[in-house]
Image 1 (tube, rainbow, N blue to C red):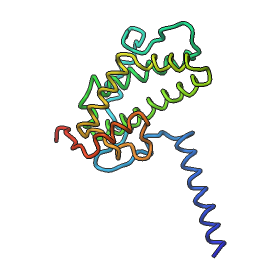
Image 2: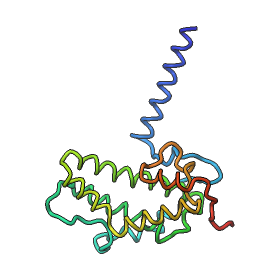
Image 3: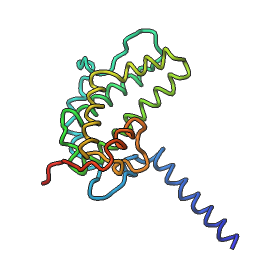
Image 4: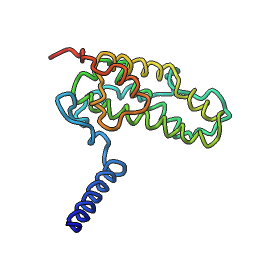
Length: 193
């Protein structure tokens, strides 16, 4: 009996390890979103292509994140990624507020929300090594008019049931969790086809 328990434990560890490697290294986190009638295939989302123009010239959009000081340690790649992600998510949620009502788009947008907040958390964790001034710089960077519009859209989408906790599965971003908890049980107001 002990042998069977050990074998099951080892096989479970291997299974979990393979899935974690696929999730964090090889795969796309969108592959691990919950299924069901609300979520489609992120790979089939049309909103991504519809929002390509929003990503073409982020330097011309004065409402995207920008640094307010020259005294910072923010890597230029992180700055560019923050701009790109903000421009994209703004297009998905603010410019096209009904895009989330289509199942495939919802899957893609939920995955992108996870990535967006993961990037913010990553930059904030890096800033913590340099003290309060750098933390403030990163928080200010992610508080552009476009970021605030995204937060307002997220609040709207959670309050009207377009986004619910089950859409995120086990990977709810910390910034979104209070919104989802506050509006738990909200009825989805997406237009029915």
